[in-house]
Image (cartoon, rainbow, N blue to C red; front, side, top):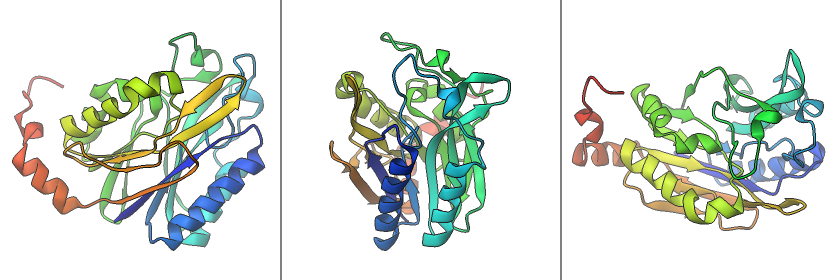
Length: 266
């Protein structure tokens, strides 16, 4: 199963961002990908800390979600992409939500980011409402994908939970900062792959978005042994690689760490 990871420089113009997604969806479909995954907040950039994300947030069935479903159906490919979702009782904040859509344009499900990035001077919780703690695992072409977002990568218990729920592939759409990305991005992703003997997909935002906020890029596909199979570098584009369940089964047979977990522990 061929997977495509979109790497885009997200702007403050929703129509521009959708055009970038559409171009990469078309390229991924033409290359034979069955699933294309885009970064968190692909709909609209985070803006400055003073900006209200509630003002740009949409319902799941709003313009962004509707267009994503149209693209999936039109190109016959499953899609995952990040948006800001309206919070019913909070006009100032939005949920940082991932939409997962099948090749018919039907919704697999949604994931609202659980862990918010209140670190290194950022206060994501001032503009983002946390998810209630529900994760998402969906099946595409017989492969089970577990979905989390960006800062969640620093919480390995979440990934172990997804593995226990039967996820074959772990997904981490992100907008990792350039400052932390240079030291932490790849090593954290490789750790999640190795400890769960699972593929990890990490699409990424890249570039300078406003002021001095810069995202790291380097969308990565990592195999269950921890080997980097594809790296998009820092320019917008696609990282593509196959996901091979026979290879994952061999790695899990050689390194059966999931079977060796103490039954009394998480």
